[in-house]
Image (cartoon, rainbow, N blue to C red):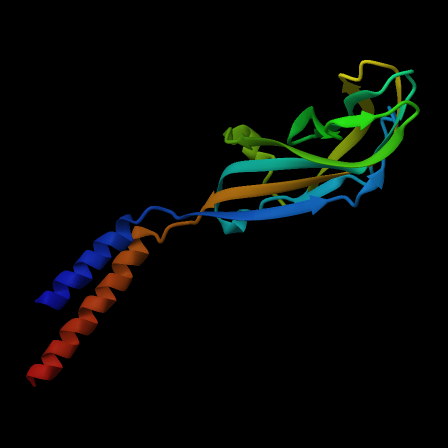
Length: 219
């Protein structure tokens, strides 16, 4: 009797178990590449991400994160007649556009920190920085666009500018800047649950097998 109760409990659980939520993640990134001041330069070919394979289950949401990285150096020359101190920055604006993700932009800033320069002094300082932009999509109409074969692209441009402050005198700032852009896209989906009819069938087979074993043991 205990065996039958156990199998029946499993049967009920199998018939009512909700779909499992799973994820699959795809990534793409560019190599570091020179970006010129205010160039509006395309880094390289568009980023590309595979579409969601509907055979895996039902798509619930799409989450993505774009990461812009800056790596370079800033040269500073003191042009004032006095010792001065301050900081310099290199800012790269990443503008992206995609038929599925829409369009937007975000900045990545690389800063020298405090620099002290004597009269006629100069220095070259390595700088680096990273920043991310992330969003989630759950609207069913928008999600439908992510389902299919093939892939979708993300186009992007970069624009670079110099900045700084607190110098208290004239300075000259030059830059050598490399930048790269990466993307990570995560599809969250529900697996197709076992149909109740199949669960009943498997459970019935288990019950028959248990009953057969009990009759055999009595014989």
